[in-house]
Amino acid sequence: MENIKIRSLLLYLLLLSFLFGASFFIYEYITNAKIWSLNPINRHLSSGSAYCGKILDRNDNVLAQTVNGKRVYSDNENIRKALLHTVGDSAASFPSSVQARYSSELFGYNLISGFGTPKPLDTTSNIKLTLDSKVCAAAYKSLKDKKGAAIVLNYLTGEIICMVSTPSYDPSNKPDIKEISENDEYKGVYINRALLASYTPGSIFKIITAIAALNNLEDAEKRIFKCTKIKVINGEKIVCMQDHGDINLKSGLAKSCDIVFSDIAIELGKDKMASEAEKLGFNKRLCAEGINLSASKYEIAENSSKADLGWSGIGQHTVLVNPMHMLIIMSAIANKGTPVEPYFIDSITSPKNNSFNIQKRRHSSMGKMISETNADKIKDMMRHTTANNYGDKMFPNMKICAKTGTAEVSKEEPPHGWMIGFSQEKKFPFAFAVIVENSDFGIKSAGPVAASIMKSVYSGYS
Ligand SMILES: [Zn+2]
Image (cartoon, rainbow, N blue to C red; front, side, top):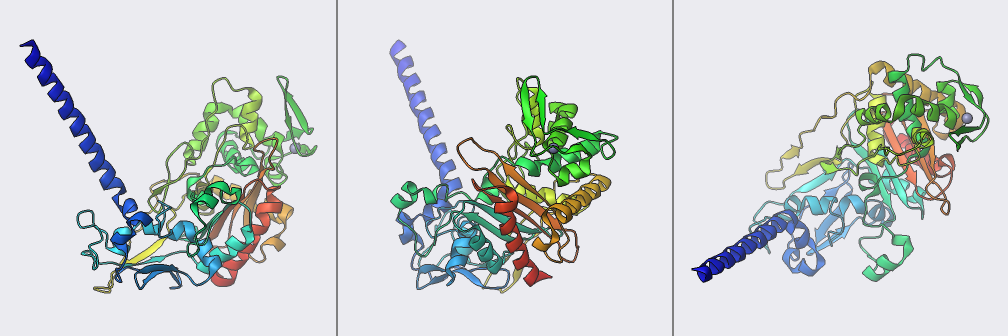
């Protein structure tokens, strides 16, 4: 009897491990088959099909198409590099790219029949993006050899006009894997930084702290803060760029006074600051075009000091932000408190019936982020900041509301430069976010990139 018991137990264990293995395989197959099938070692699966769809930009410029069984990209090298992370390459190296996520529409890929080569069983379609490849190429050129991201969004519709992440490479002339893994120039190349990276924000976070102040301090606008350059809190220092003397919230934002915003964070406390940040989408999974963005974080540890909390109010300490999320906040401020959900697929067209399948737009599920009154107050402060501190010459005729940031990341490396903002003109409804990693002050590094991209948008869309 004992023997039989042991044998049956062993059999059950074997059966269980088999079931576990089989379920794991099926799960992996269902979730990853599309991506495996596009891998270069499986190229025999998708090659030879002349039926694959095209990817077009908003002006019908071809970004990717299949010619004689081979996937070819735009004939402009800058456009190919600028759109690599959005369009993807033939090796499906970018899981968030259109070629990886929409392989069933583009290549007729089907979970049961695969690509069904030589002719796919499923109809293949063309995919039109909301991106303007010219603007993207201009953004790529102005980021030069720096790592970072640049995005432009229509804040009334949610259409992404420009999305560029650097470093990049030419999908028509891909460097070899060894070079990509060993050469620092390509570090993090597979990450679409606009969607999937989070960074220390530095002073762009003062916008969030200012909203928290307006929401919670009755005298927020009237109060006079005192900046004597250095403030010592329980033996720890917070050091401002200069001695601003008596200063209010509006000038504090324009002059980017660290003392004003560290004072606010300390007065509100970490729980209130966290709940205010969460109202604006921090510590949450937000989406753009159905892709989960890397989360922005405002989490202050229990044992953090008062000075740490002060630093968090000026976007340092452990605060992290995602560039696309910053653009969502810009859209909320521009739209009286209600954000838009960003997207970059305009439409999917099936060549069979020629019908234009305009995707149903997911109107923001995020709800109101800021009250109408306070959104307008922040907008005015950001407008004042641009006009008085950066100068409207940077963005001629655009009436830009903006804020720069310089995020200290370590003692050894130069800071990350940021600039985020939007035009207050509803007839030119564009918002931008630019980050340039390990560069310089935001106004010196991200500023010129933002200016050149917005000029390029203005020349095409005003
Ligand atoms: Zn100051």
